[in-house]
Amino acid sequence: MTQQAVSKYIARLEETLGFRLFLRTRHYVKLTWAGEMYRDLFARYQEDFDRVGEAVAAYYRDLQKQIKLGYLEMLDISSCIADALKQARQKDGELRFSGVKLPQHELLEQFADRELDMIITYREFAPKEAGVRSHRILNTPLVLLVSPEDPVNVPGATVADFRSHPFIKTAAGREPVAETRERALRQCRELGFTPEKIVVAPNLESAYMNAELGQGVFVSTMLSRVSLHSSLTCFPIGKEEELRCFWHENTENRTVARFADMLQKAFQSRERQENAEGVNVLA
Image (cartoon, rainbow, N blue to C red; front, side, top):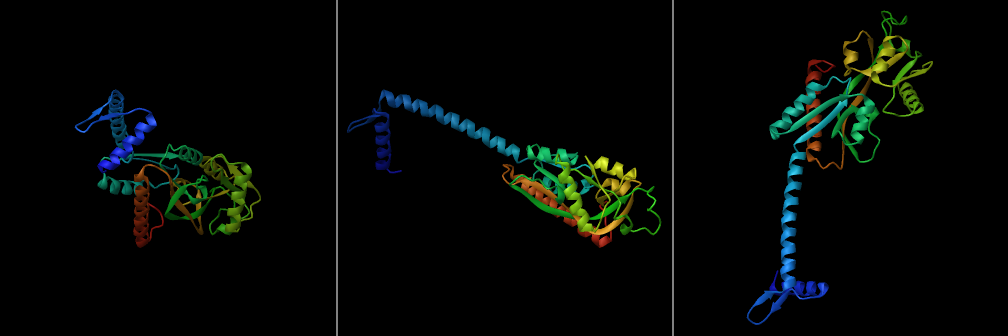
């Protein structure tokens, strides 16, 4: 600033305060008593400003070094997450990662409460709040899960043989039963099913248990550990479900969006590798 500009601002401040801050003569400029009081005040303010600035900078440095990720408990995707984490730690060796498997309703609740930076779940269960971004990370084949004790489940049976069976659907979070039924009917229309009734399960464990007990058929994916390892019979449907990662657009942690990109690349790399090998499930 020029001397004239400084003098202008000081004069304006003195006018606002109602008293002079400087005594001026031809030979010197001296602080008045009021000037000394305000000088000390602003010196303390500068110290506080610097201290807060250091604390804020430390907070954001620490914030950028952590990721809290949650994903649907039945998904068998830990190896791809490990691939993305390895890449992230190559860029920042101090990155702290926290991963947790949760039931669908807890996953959505903790994401809404900002207890999780990012979640991985199916597109069908996408968070409903505004300002959520997402990446498609994988398409996985849908399968119809049928109890081995079902009398229709005989050699040569096809998906068409079970189209009128009771259809089991998992509630998403704490949605009303009517909303779950509507999602079930929408999926049935897409698949060409005409079930005699809809069976609403409060969670995935209950849905799989109902299927095992022969209470109906259940549509799952080949990413599900139950689909891969249970006694239920898997009938390929010929359609796919989209797995996505979700995060809040207005998060202050810039590492979250970067990690979402790494997740997408890790899953797509594994997908290309398995397609080349002719394998349809994740190892």
